Amino acid sequence: MALLRARLSNALFAHWRWYARSERGALFTGTIEHEPWRVAPAAATISVDGLFGASGFEPPGGAPVTHIDSPSPITVESVAPARLTRR
Image 1: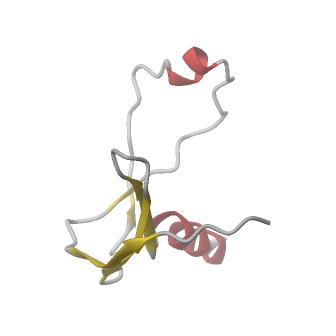
Image 2: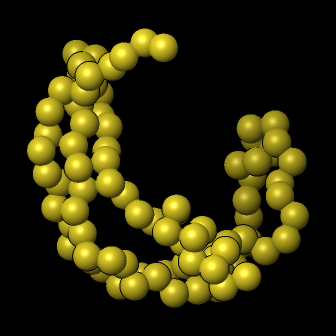
């Protein structure tokens, strides 16, 4: 179970690339560099959550998955137009 949680945390919190669209519709991409985040389990109390119902979905069962980290500096590198390929 610890390995599964480690993989989940890595999948949720590791960011290697970002994408953004300009006001004119051009798509840009770049890499994100940062030291490994020191993610730790956390607890949260959710008093009202109407997003699922407003979207027409049933809320998931069980407790939410929560994590916390202290602020970490990041650097955005190599901004460039994204190259799209059709499959």
